[in-house]
Image 1 (cartoon, rainbow, N blue to C red):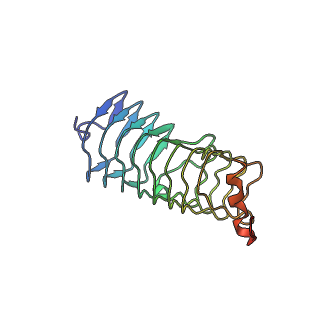
Image 2 (cartoon, one colour; image 1 turned 135 degrees about the vertical axis):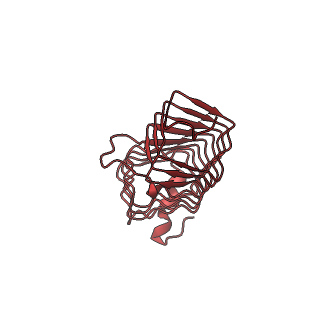
Image 3 (tube, rainbow, N blue to C red; image 1 turned 45 degrees about the vertical axis):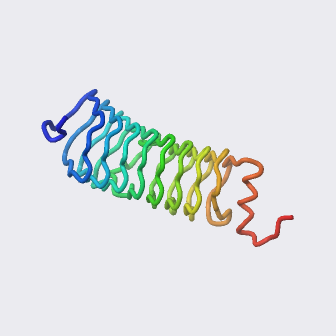
Length: 197
């Protein structure tokens, strides 16, 4: 199916489509499913995605220009090197407009974003920038966070159960009521310059 044909799509399923390198502009997708599609290095310019799901897709190096996401689920997909700060996020966010399950989102940026109830479940999220953001009540459970950066980040009430390889400075982040596994929580002591024996 050629995405260029229509301006609006409702309850449409796109399967094994190759949109790599394409520029998709001013389109609205509502209730759509994208299955095993390739969006690598594509450009989404002023598009709107409402109640959509991406499954087994390649979104790596996707460039997002002022596009909107509402109730979008990305599942079992590769979304490496995406600058999520370019999304036209709503001013008021009552629940996370985007959720990741079993994804790889390495080298991406969420710098300065306010995404309460953000979901990053069972993902590989290495070298991801979460600085200066509000991720209160977020779910980072079962995720690999090696090299990801948290600084002046609101993580109050966040769930890091079964998350691994995170480095979070307890003095420079808000961790009130955040949840950690008992043994992994010792990683939080790294900023204290103490020796654990």
